[in-house]
Image (cartoon, rainbow, N blue to C red; front, side, top):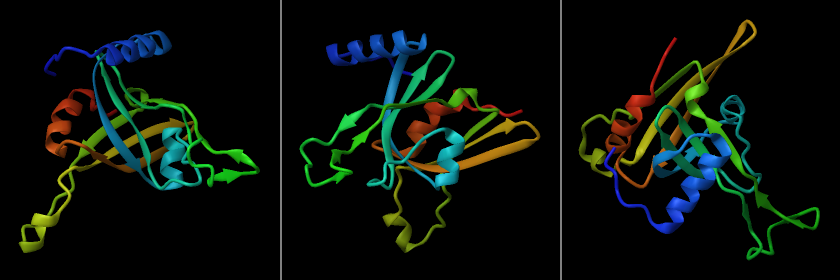
Length: 162
């Protein structure tokens, strides 16, 4: 991954993240993650009731890949309340490298006139983990701000299988 100079805010965040996990990021990408409730459970993520996807950071560390959601309060959206309390997005952190298998793919779009309208920023994340005799699998869709093949190049180093 190409090293770019970090802004002061990025350096502070990387310091915070390293203190929290013991791993220092050397890069990150903002992505949205969408999947079924069962898939999110396998990943250990919780979807707030008022959202259909989770926005977070893919954090590339030397040996580990993380998905991190920063806690957020919706105080400016006073109309969104539950039990007279303002809703919040809680902090969530998943080490994707700790799953038994981890792979990424880009959906194949059949060439056609309409393929020019295909979203070129979508890719798929697949993981599995063993729980006793049961193997749990999850497949979720991610969308990035950069084209999926560019992100996939960064992610290939973290893929693994049993």
